[in-house]
Image (cartoon, rainbow, N blue to C red; front, side, top):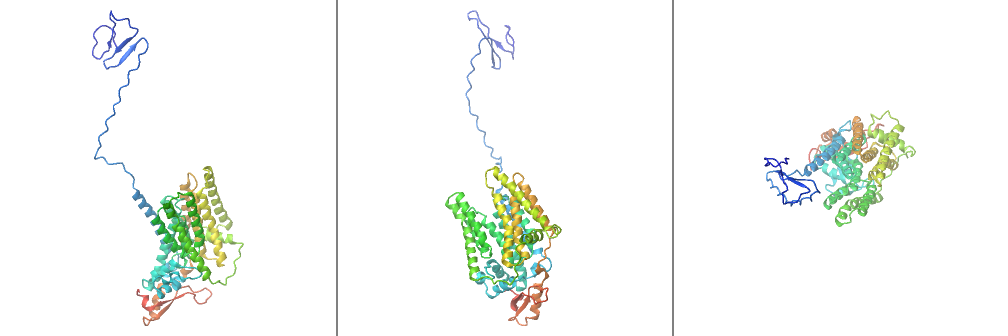
Length: 501
């Protein structure tokens, strides 16, 4: 800034000087070329008025610019379906191939060849599907029998094995999907299916035969009881499946109590609108109706009591540890671990997980649903085992399948409920169970000793079928070790052994 009287040069400031007629100013205003003003001396000038705000014009739309991606929900749903389908396939294949000895698709086991296959041959169609046997109904096993007779009878063992494996694997998937409130991610549900199917007990005597399907159907019913479908069409479809399961499972009565209690709780605490109520009650009603028919059958056509020796009731916990925890989870790896050690490990693990979940829930002033359902599943494991021993008066490998599945599912739910590290703890627990199960891969069911149904049926067709109107008597159970005669036989129409209906 220059304050002499010479003309201002370009880029300099201009100074206003007083004239003779002007009063002596008490301040000096200096105006710069760029429009800025500085005042020297005197009181400060009032601030200049604010310029009027002119809204900026909106930019013209760019027509060739792509919109921001909104995600791919269909791709995510497809990935969820693929994960669950893969877990279903793993469970099915594991049940079919793990039993050693004669392959499952070449053995026809017990009631598969007597009640279900012969019933479908003698009465084609749905007529005998609700016929009682052994004190309860067997809808799905009889449906499997009706499917098997659509093929040549020489292939009946393969039909029973594959169909039973598919149904059992689907039941495990339903259990996992029913726990989606506690395991929200599809990968967690798939991991639960794999972890439940990995222990030998789930793929032992009960695997790949219709006679033992009800053990898996109990697990599927438990998942359906907790499913909570959101829309009426899905609820009606789930109710149809639940009714079929309940009409095939003697434990449906216990699951019906769970289903009704969960539906009542949802009705009380959830939104009270017609749509929610319509989707809430079809599944519990279907399970309760099937359970009522099972109870009626048990009363009207009770099971004939067997002349078995009463088991001592003071060592049920020891039997549970041996048959469920050791032989059911990993007999080869846990063979050297004592009963007390196994009991301590399982009990302390469940207690620690439960304590962490309850502490986290208490911090939020809530009950903690992970703690409730996890404890319920873990506690049901020894309860179901003790009930089987008390009713049947004998210890069998098949009595460990459901307790092992309930124990594994309960531990996984508790692990998932631990705050901050729940998913990692869930993954570590599932990996540990799968590793233990796969290290004891082969199972040794009684039917692995034969006979080979496929070979026996072909031999019978050559020796007992001079004419098509005859029937061939085929042995389907191993010869007893005491030298007595085999117990299980089936009679095949000669005209149907190598030909379909």
